[in-house]
Length: 100
View 1: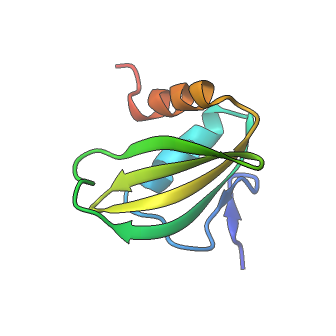
View 2: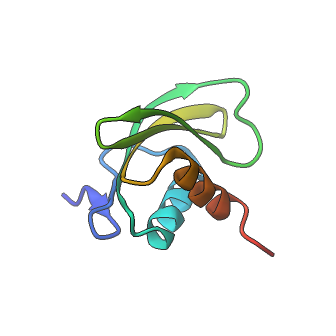
View 3: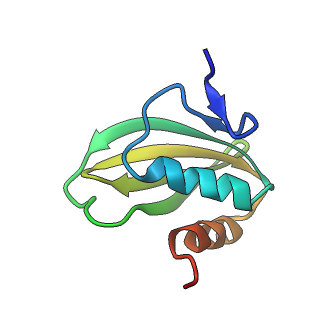
């Protein structure tokens, strides 16, 4: 069974909420400093409507924890990287809001 995609950087052992997989794949392609992204628990929420949103929350041992909101649900993301919180937020913003 193949559990990872994009040179082993995106773990897809569990499901990923709608729209988030494409964002994570673009994020990994555009930022070689990100070692891996591991999606976590999915929970239903009321305020997850419209475009995909990703919010970096707290530091973890080897990177950052983030929350992705989309399609009426939120999902934890564990991002393994040496980037600072500001650099990671900027990289995510560039993926979510590509310049026209």
